[in-house]
Image 1 (cartoon, rainbow, N blue to C red):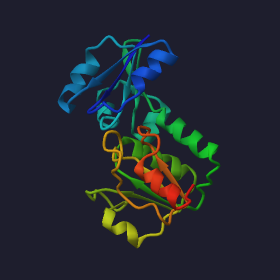
Image 2 (cartoon, rainbow, N blue to C red; image 1 turned 120 degrees about the horizontal axis):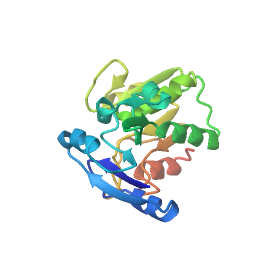
Image 3 (tube, rainbow, N blue to C red; image 1 turned 120 degrees about the vertical axis):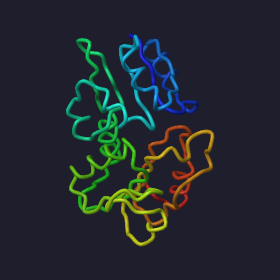
Image 4 (cartoon, helix red, strand yellow; image 1 turned 90 degrees about the vertical axis):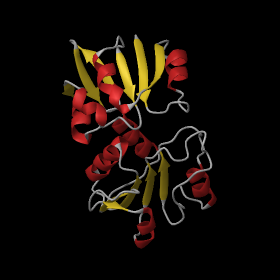
Length: 209
């Protein structure tokens, strides 16, 4: 098997080490500009392609088929070649489901704040809606719809769960954080490098799970 990860900036990624060492798979990290995505997807010899920020939504327009997870979330982080067709999957959804199950976090009737509006934010929103949350808001520097608020407006709401779905805090900018997590009951940061982000460190200081 031969695979790769595509994204705009990948110097933080452990994907090559993980696939090479644990799955004995030939694996490459490929940084792409947005205008080169179509050409790459249509002309490559990889068996599978992982997709990361900020292209999880952009790649959808070049795929032949979407599985149920990608279709429902309108986001794709895994592309496989099947019968000479590009098929999109969303394994982010499974990761989110298992994370909340592992920590036994009940989302029913909770208020959710998602930082960011990219592909994984869509996946998070889909998951939270399936759990009958009472309020879901996205925080962004650019207001795109009624579900989006500015970072300055966060103080005007009361949220139970905070999820960082932006690259802020990712290596090498490990001291960066968008919000103070004080007042939340649970904080989830999708950034994995570093393991303890500034956001999670501040949450720990405030005894937040």
